[in-house]
Length: 237
Image 1: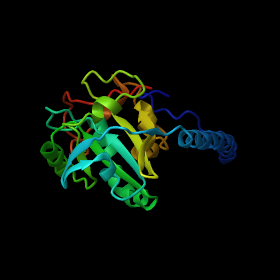
Image 2 (image 1 turned 180 degrees about the vertical axis):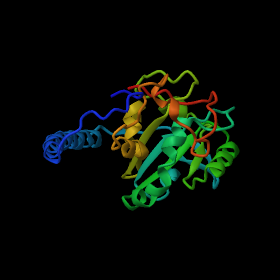
Image 3 (image 1 turned 90 degrees about the horizontal axis):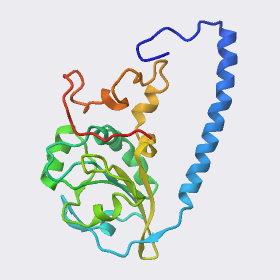
Image 4 (image 1 turned 60 degrees about the vertical axis):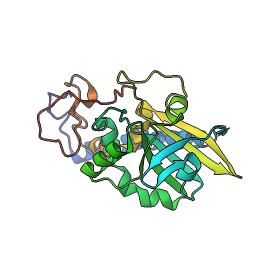
């Protein structure tokens, strides 16, 4: 079934559906077991000491990387694509950011702080944050070496717009901050909860007929408006 062909793949009896669904259930369980294994591998990566001081502009003044932990032992620092001269954020990063506020109390309860950082000036980040109705902490790394050191630690090229959406993970242990993980590209798709709701619908993402898979994305206050050229992340693999 393609994006433009909404003919049902099959019409069957309840018994046929149940047999097919039970077979799929075994595949789903195998997939989850594989994912659990990946999570354990991620958590066993070597820790690398952070030997440089990084400063960020925040609504509470200039703060160091360690201060961003906000008293917790683990820090998720998501690079939201918003360049120094941009007036609004990347659509893809905005899509992901829509999932943060609801998750925050649960994340914090596990001794984890989640912060977004961008190269844009703080006042523009806060203006866009207000427009989108978000509450999470968003800091500026404009005058820091953080992006140069952590945007591309895997040696991948940034997007054509000069930005790369990444998730860097840090931990504090015995007075030292360590870098533990970097997530990139479709590796971050698991954070986009809306996709996983959509994937359960019979037509799914329905992207086959688009010029590129994310062409349907809009900022949440722009659905229903005509499509316009905009800055976004290209996520293909």
